[in-house]
Length: 86
Image: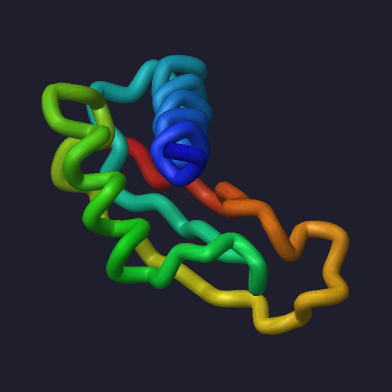
């Protein structure tokens, strides 16, 4: 369930960016997974696909990098790095 909360927060932040920009949809997200986030890139994409159905994010490309530094202050985080809108 923790994963779903993180994904919902990510979606909300990306939608907020789109609304601020006056966009009609999000075309791509760039996300960094912390080493201790317990998600793989494919798992994150699956969660985002389900969570974004019917939203401005539906169908957006998701580019994911994985940080392998377990000592990083953001090792448990899912960080939204960029949002592309149309």
